[in-house]
Image 1 (cartoon, rainbow, N blue to C red):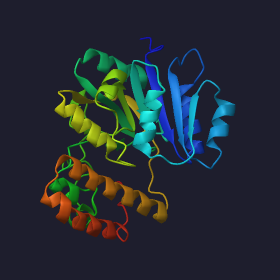
Image 2 (cartoon, rainbow, N blue to C red):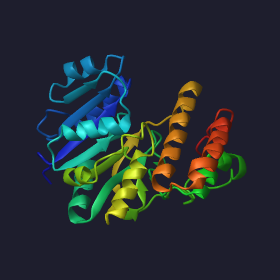
Image 3 (cartoon, one colour):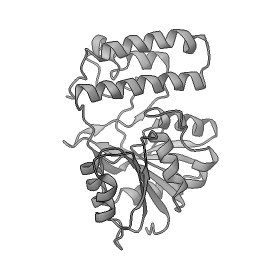
Image 4 (spheres, rainbow, N blue to C red):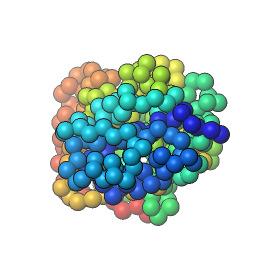
Length: 288
């Protein structure tokens, strides 16, 4: 299948020079065998990312923000600069499989009401990395395996129990929400629903978009034969706490936006603060 002029790949990066260069190497920008438009939005990196990309990949459309504008806003900036019929959002630390773009595009084209179309992610060791999930509820927010309370109380739950994150599927499957780590969407549809909500600086912007697409009558899809290796890691303790802070803040914004009730206004901040405090002392559990 020819994807020439059809797919614009949007990558947002912040101080991720080795990762984004590896990601771009897989995409082969400027080469005949990789006809996609590639847009990289650099969010105020100070590690030399803009200069390195200019030198190595002249065909890449590079947008350099003077400061970190947040993931959602930067994705929207990249989408505005794109020209393809479809947008493919990729994390900079994702090494996409060679046939993944065609696989995602084929499913999107054959599904008239397709919303976000996501591929199957793998950890560097080859194991499955969950990137599809149920819409957040108070229960799965506080007690899923990925939460601190879940790690404390339900240590024997399987990695993908279906409580919040969803299991691996063998066939194309409709799912409530997908991560924007590797997700394809029609550009006109993305613009119609006003893209990612820039109020989410980091995290939950993809779940919010998934929910808005669901409300608009579209279906979000998981495509197991479109893959990629996502080098997600725990990182330093300071980095983990910063990410946890942004995640908890975005969760609160999500509930305030979609469920503006007394719980979201008063009780949820208390519960999230408690969960955030626990995350400072309870390390992420190793995958089995």
